[in-house]
Amino acid sequence: MNEHLKNDSANIGNLLNIIKEQGTDYLNSIEERLTSVINNTISKRQELPESGFGTEEALRIFNEKFEPIMVGSGGPRYWGFVTGGATPASIAGDWLTTVYDQNPQSVTEQGDASAKIEMETIQLLLKLLQLPESFLGGFVSGATMSNFTCLAVGRQWLGKEQGRDIAKEGVSGTVKVLTATPHSSSIKSLSLLGLGSGNIIKIKTEEGNREAIRIKDLEENILKLNGEPFILISSGGTVNTVDFDDFKSISRLKEKYNFWWHIDAAFGGFAACSETHQHLVEGWEYADSITVDCHKWLNVPYESAVFLIKEQYKILQVETFQNSNAPYLGDPLENFSYLNFLPENSRRLKALPAWFSLMAYGKKGYQEIVDNNIAWAQQFGQMIENSHDFKLLAPVRLNTVCFTLKDDTRQNEVEQFLEKLNDTGKVFMTPTFYNQHKGIRAAFVNWMTSEKDIRQVFDLMNKIIAEIK
Image 1 (tube, rainbow, N blue to C red):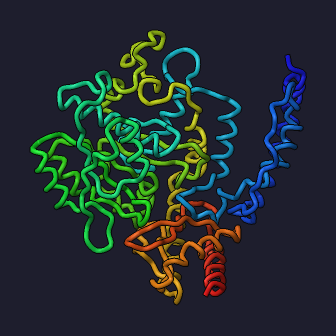
Image 2: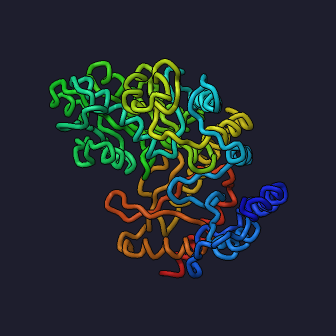
Image 3: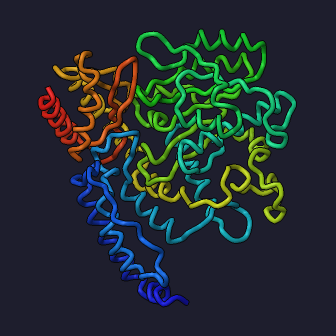
């Protein structure tokens, strides 16, 4: 045995304590951690060592070379993209996930039975999101893979409606996909599935600064298909303005027409936790599949998302993902195994951090996180609205504020302003383009964010805009 490996094994307790102390120091100071690193130059490339250095020396090299570029992405003022933090319970679950190192597959076979944790966690999530138990779910790496998994089963459904087995025969002809404002991960999934990212039939959006599907235009386009089955991708919170499609109206259309209904509710689905905003997802239980991202508003570490697909389609799901050339895996329909229900064969126990956090904080804990983030978004949006230098590009519908500089003649300064703001390392936001304007997005999904963060950032914005005038 390698001498370093032997010594590390004998010294594992001390090594974990060293890592625990470093991790604790980081978490205790995360509010002060820079949100962007300006000087991120890395020293020369490390060569592969002949016999290794051992873990303590590897940690020293990491701390010298890479630790300085670790930003506070899990902190209270990292508002770029839609980036959640990690609750203490989810961190505990994540550490144990690494320690136990399970590969969740079957719930009945010999060997690893950790899939039972995953199935229980899915049931807890369904309760949290007020969805029926008729959904079968599993964990994947993120919303992209969740959208991919859901749309793959939708592709198989559509093929069967046309009398073909796409999983076996491959894609031939065109598959009609209707949508209004899809997330880029859905477009990527269509490309990966061979359905073609350019085969979308774009539906008009509702009038009045909206990104939601115009139901009248949707039905008109459905009628043009003359009964041909299709896939509908609808939004449970668009990325720029968190607009929601009218799920109740779509569910009524589903009673009249033949289509696979997928909802991308990566972060917007957590509106179900809020008594004041759960109406936004009313009717989503009638969808065939739903994407929900856990490393966003559930506040668990990366990589964590779930697919939710109606259990009535489990045969289609198995046809799509079964390991048909591996007889040792058994009959996919006789004994449930995640190996035959999603893309990956080898998987981390992604459910455990979510299970820990759901058990630790419960329904009320998550309701508070969601409601607080909504309140901070509304407060920040009000500050923008009352400002002399900034303006909203869209109403604050849930947890994201989309804004720009108030003076339209200064559109060429938006990027400069955002760059200077992010360069402070006190906050991080992302650029966007909406309604013919260069804009800025601030997304609130972190359990740590508080009112003082809102005020600190807004004061900083006013200081920077004054400097570039």
